[in-house]
Amino acid sequence: MVFPVPGGQTVALQGADLDIAPGEFISLIGPSGCGKTTLLRLMADLIRPTGGELTVGGESPEAARRRRAYGYVFQAPALMEWRNVLSNVLLPLEVMNVPGDRKARAREMLRLVGLEKFERSYPWQLSGGMQQRVSIARALAFDPPLLFMDEPFGALDEITREMLNLELLRLWRETGKTVVFVTHSISEAVFLSSRVVVMTARPGKIEGIVPIDLPHPRGDDTREDPRFFAAATEVRELLRRGHA
Image (tube, rainbow, N blue to C red; front, side, top):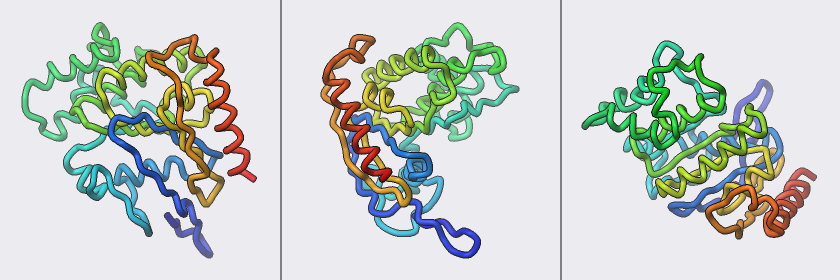
């Protein structure tokens, strides 16, 4: 992926080779500016690649987007302040003209993220963590097989972040979605993932992939497991090597 800049161009991604299997939880981690979000945006057809080959479910990202193959959770919740929680979750169902009982589906998603008692609340009445849970419910509302998440918990305090990590793993196990998750946190990447993909400094490429051999369900004890520390150390070493 090459971006034009005044007087030349910037190579954001080069040789970023990666295969993701259905049902995996993949975390992308690397130094700032390495192309993690760019890679996610390419998968989501928010931008078009300038070279190479990219397929989502065996088809082009554009075709995958048109058949509603994925939901996208941004760094900020990006909720409509004038719509209540239920109406925010309903929004993609309305825009896509999804058939069936939309309110029932939206309420099901709110139950899934534990916010069924807040459907009449407005975003400004919720904490930051609750707003992100609404954002996740909205992304899941039309039942996409893929979930793209771009540092969704990066602005939250550590306690809230750890709580939402647990909630996200529960959702992943219950729904069977494929998740691609961007983070700057080694601990978060190891705790959540089935594999951690470590990227180099710009131009971004895949420095290494660390399989995470930790049992499910994961909880507070997981972070005390020697395998957790071993995986975190391997990710850290790859980050250092890719940043050199």
